[in-house]
Image 1 (cartoon, rainbow, N blue to C red):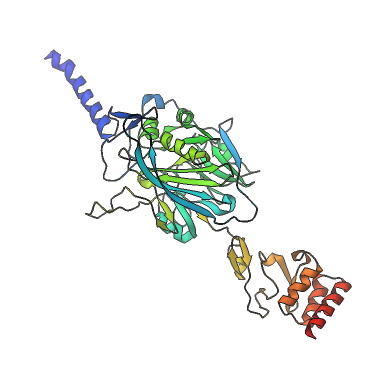
Image 2 (tube, rainbow, N blue to C red; image 1 turned 60 degrees about the vertical axis):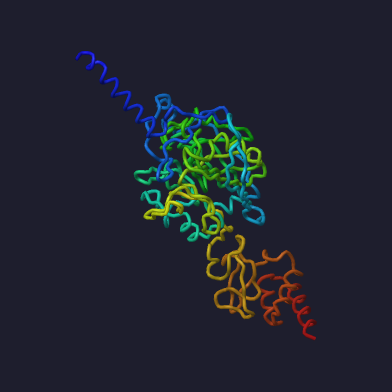
Length: 455
């Protein structure tokens, strides 16, 4: 009897530990991938989750989950591609890939995905919170396809992590200059764009996030800084990060198991690079080290791992083109797959105009307001002598005619040619010449030129 009293608790404990290890994907059956442990062919879930609650290993409890208000943290700052110059077309170029990835034992494994290169990211890339705005504070989620269509996105991907229970955005989130989520210095890597046109990769203190002299215009957090300045940075990131942002299990498990992955990074030219690989957690896909090594070969120099697994979606013009691991809800057909609702997204779009609607006087094309007129002077301020004016502040009004400012024309000759092309009458030309140029000689030349043209 005494024997069973002593032995039975140990048997029950061993049984419980085995159950936890097997059900939660921590069975001691690992394949070594690129020299690291990676779980293989563990429990299959009805949906692909990187969000199931797992017990953290004791070694991770001592990692940096303390809030940092200030101090030194690892960061990488890079000039972006043409932040304030002319727009380079195409705005985004994406390509599918299928590549063989090496493993320590057995034949290389083939995986597929997409990679995209984004020009002028300061003007063409935005972090968006879910729904119509305020979604982070409200704990909302939304379909990527719907968010893409509402915001005119050319390319849209899921971005930051979120709490699976409350849907609250995790990490720091800045969308178009507005801070909508603050992690108060919790140490996980972030990707961001600052007001001065630089790209940011790395860790942040709360003081960094709240910086006012060069604030973030867009910012989103990840888990796993996998490339830093042209070198694989996986191990260093693994040692520095707070594991609580992801919910797959131990941070080691999250980094090393096969899964669908979503990454945002940059190349040497300062273009933003977005890449994903298809997969299903524990079954197929890549470890973070495998993906980092491959991305390095594609010219990527900095990269942050975003939310992946079943949240992964790579949508072009509002239509997902990647493989989803989730079976459609309510469907008995397990061959069909559907995408799930997510939290924040990254939207690649046409450059925005300011104001976005060109004050109702024109059309926004590549970030510039272009005025299309029908040959008559318009009451709205759009006229047949004004084109490519950014907004109403670019001209003043006097009498019945809109008056172009002198700064809109490089010299008198350009002004005269513009009048000729628009077939302005002589009286109108003299009137405009007096008001906008304010030099008698200019008026005489305008009048002479237009009179001679009418002969």
